[in-house]
Structure formats: structure tokens, C-alpha cells
Image (cartoon, rainbow, N blue to C red):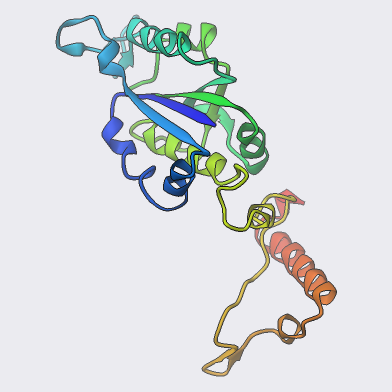
Amino acid sequence: MRIDIITVQPGLLESPFSHSILKRAQTKGLLEVYTHNLRDYSTLKHNQVDDYQFGGGAGMVMMIEPVVNAIESLQAKVQYDEIIYMTPDGQTLNQGMANQLSLKGNLLILCGHYKGIDERIREHFVTKEISIGDYVLSGGELAAAVLVDAIGRLIPGVLNDETSALLDSFQDNLLAPPVYTRPEEFRGWKVPDVLMSGDHKKIDNWRHDMAVERTKERRPDLL
């Protein structure tokens, strides 16, 4: 999978893709992530990419020309399955959406900034708009990093144990059950006996029951 990200702050994306699972995915050749500085596509003095909004009002707007220049320049080299705009008023990211996007071949992500992007970009180029929650960030870079992480870990071969992703919270509309590791007893606090029984059927049933119980308690809306 290849993911290209258009941003005015490429430095914000250096660390998230240089460590842990996403770094391993790129090292294995399973994922390619490229960041593109929007200012490189500006034709104006000082590489300007924003301007005042028509009609007045506080806040600047990302201009249509540099964004379209960037998109079309990349489209000349890569055929994208989706052009995604990270925006607070987009569809809220969930596990199902991450699953679907992980099956795509190439994605282009546009990070918003200021008061957003010229609406004509959304009308004529963007194919999917995604939000990571009902709040506003300074820009779309952190949201893009969250999206790439959610997608990247699902690509076959990225995780050492591919079944791990299938047991994550939300994969079956349930939260994940409690987990334990060594030591078996600590300060008198013991691991549930069923997990030490070696009976995998009983363990699976226990985990499912605990997942349902935890979901009822914490996220009943999922049920």
C-alpha cells in the first residue's frame, strides 16, 4: 500500500512514521508513506498557500491553486483509490472504515489547516472526508497520523501475529476483554483461574463473556 500526505507541516509527521509498527511496515516493504509540502506547489511569493476568506470572517483559508497543483501532480504518477480530506465535519473514523481502507492500494490524504480548504477542492477532488472525533485540532497532521496507523497495522504481514488485529476492540462491535501476563499472582491479586486452565474453549467463552460485559458497562451504544 502507498499513502501520500499533502501538508503544510511535514515535520509533524516525521516521528509517527519513524517508529514501532509503522516503521516496521515500511522496512518490510508492505507500506509506503510519503509526505509532500504544500508550499512546494505554490506559485506565489513566499510560497503562500492561504488567503482571507471571501465574505469576511476570522481565519485564513487554504487556497485552491496550490492544493490542486499538488493533487494533480501526484495523480500524474499514482492512481489513487481515495482522496481523503481530514476534517472535523467528516465521517467519524471507526474500525470498520479502517478495515475497508486497509484493502485499498493507494491513498492520498489532504491535511487541513487554518479555517479549512477552499470548498471547490472538496467538491471536485475529495472522495472521502474523515474526522477522528468531535473536536478541533490545529491541523490535520495528527489526524492523518492516526488514520495511517489504524490502516497500516491491518495490512497482512505488518503485525507479527496477524490474528492480533482481529481481536482488537471494535472488530466485532465489542470492546476487548481483560488481559493478563506474568506473574500469576502479585500482592495477592490473582489471574482468573480459567486463563490458567489450558482449556481453550473455556478461555474463548470467558473472553467473549468479559468482552460483552465490558461493552455493556462502558459502551452500551455498540450493542
